[in-house]
Image 1: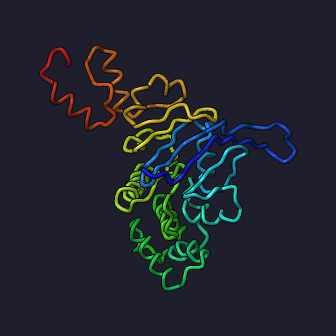
Image 2: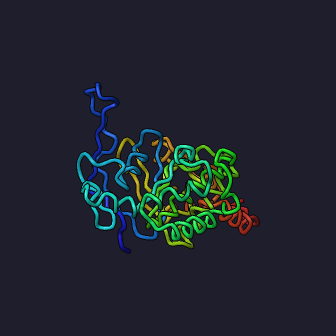
Image 3: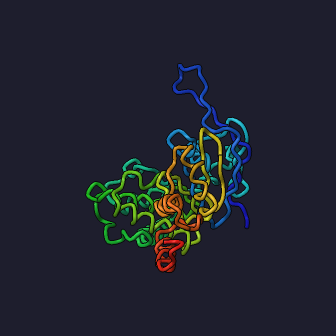
Length: 287
């Protein structure tokens, strides 16, 4: 498949503040390809470099060394940086930080207006974006009257209205309750599966990544694992050493195996685990 984003040997160093002479290395020679139309999940503990990597994908942060190329545009090229940001949209952890207007539909219109889109097309884009996230009926509401999950859906609509090819979600459910998390995840999967958007999801919730096409595991500025979810989550000991959990079904399967129960090590969904147990419930060897 065609790569929409190419990350080549990227290193990123920074200082805590203008007076600090100590250099901190957030990314250390990272290389990664993001395929067009794919769903890539990036996981890692706080400080692993995953959010710094996310900010490189649309030029919010530029590499100290190496390069990031988006749809053929190098993020270090000031003349094409605007094109990069048209191709790749960002949704952050706190939706309040992305709200700029007192009315929901005006907030969603902000991005297209800055792109110089004609008013009639902006109207169509705003309606389309709000309908895509299930917030059209709230278009006249004030953002501060919405729940956390609803605010995040409006923030997503604001990005969708700009018609990017790729959307990067930087821990978008971290501040939400379980209901809000499910609402946002459902929208993310819809954008990928139905609308064909390339998705990059940064998260520390392992159950959010089991449906991804590819999982990237980061630790101390390095990519330490990369592969399909079933390939990654069988390596639970390595994940634990990196400070990460595994999906509940994978963890339960591991504990059952330690008790001598023959559970396949590639089960990561609860439905798979339940089906396997039901099918083998009569086998004394297994259960």
